[in-house]
Amino acid sequence: MQNVQNYLSENKDRFLNELIELLKIPSVSADPAFSQDVIDTAESVKLRLQEAGCDVVEIHETAGYPIVYGEKIVNPELPTVLVYGHYDVQPADPIDLWHSPPFDPVIKKTETHPEGAIYARGACDDKGQMYMHVKAMELMVKTNQLPCNVKFMIEGEEEVGSNNLSIYVAENKEKLANDVILISDTGMIANDIPSITTGLRGLSYVEVEVTGPNRDLHSGLYGGAVANPINILSKMIASLHDENNHITIPGFYDKVEDLSKEERTEMAKAPFDLGNYQKALDIDSVYGEKGYTTNERNSIRPTLDVNGIWGGYIGEGAKTVIASKAYAKISMRLVPNQDWKEITELFKTHFEAIAPKGVTVKVKPHHGGQGYVTPIDTVAYQAASKAYETTFGKKPIPQRSGGSIPIVSLFEQELKSKTILMGFGLDSDAIHSPNEHFGVWNYFKGIETIPYFYQYFSEMSKK
Ligand code: BES
Ligand code: MN
Ligand code: MN
Image (cartoon, rainbow, N blue to C red; front, side, top):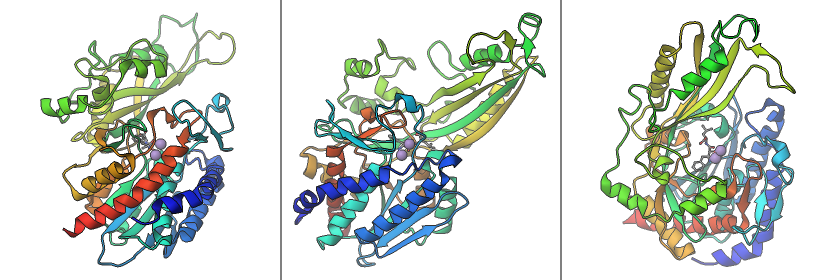
């Protein structure tokens, strides 16, 4: 392909500065205090898509935050790639743990990113990765060599469950018609070990409430004589795993897809260093389901984790009290064939059933979604693989991820197309954590690799 490198090196500073500008807007979808910023970010994405060469760019209002749609149709006869990404970000909390302000991006060199990394909330998840696609398209349009049609659908509610996007997709099937969906919102193994994400886990997220007495009580006067909701909740949660770290909810594993011995052997070939893994997290041992490796536990196996737990007195000093209520937020990561609605029901039935006398339990489902697996025997996967081979000089390893992008399985259901997950982040980039960052090298590598996907996908689709 002509001029990819030239265009990239001539425009590097601008590409970086544009991303930095985008990262300055705190588009936190979970917190209403930032609603105007989220809307402003949608406007800014719209402008950028126009500048980059889209012929049509529209903002679609929803019951929540807007969806930005853009397209560059070169010729209706050519294949069409639908790019999905999200412009919303996770809350920055806990702010105190950031070394620089989360919405004031700075570039710092690190051991993993010797060419520098951009530190800001959303740098990797997903503004940085989404914006690689905007710049890749610009590059192809401005050098007159875009070999396919490109559509963009960039949403602002991914981090809060994409509810309005699912409605939008179901109502706009024709507009969104495509030959493949391309997403950069995942990671890869390492900068010198490229990989393509071939699976995402599903998710069921619930909140539970345990109520004991009708008011908070003196823990001396009543302690020992009534059920303490916090004690009970802790016990109930502890009982959800057995001594092998198997989940005890009846029926939970019924539909879990078991990988063949061959598939597991293949998976085990991916480079993984347990010592480094533990060192990076300052832990002296890993922990998890018996009979599975760390990489299996965090990708092909379902899990149940408490994400937050509260109740009673948590202020300064001590207060002797038995709280009336205790709460927890629980996520279950699911694997192919498990249905998130069914699992949510199983959880609810079980959790209510194990509540002892003396308390009442409420289970409130939050959101969820199905898992997804990308087949690797398709033209799209082969094209992606070849694109990485071209720019990394190495064949990428297919690898299932433990994270979730619930909308992906809905894309397949509604639009009947497969998704290719070309992620350029690293696990150590701290997405959702303080000090999130994205390697400058990774950003440019993404911009460089995506055009080759367009090229190979178009060529290989012809055959
Ligand atoms: N981009 C992530 C998901 C992800 C990250 C998948 C890395 C694979 C590798 C996405 O923004 C995300 O955070 N998803 C949520 C689910 C959503 C319903 C809030 C998640 O996985 O917790
Ligand atoms: Mn994301
Ligand atoms: Mn995220």
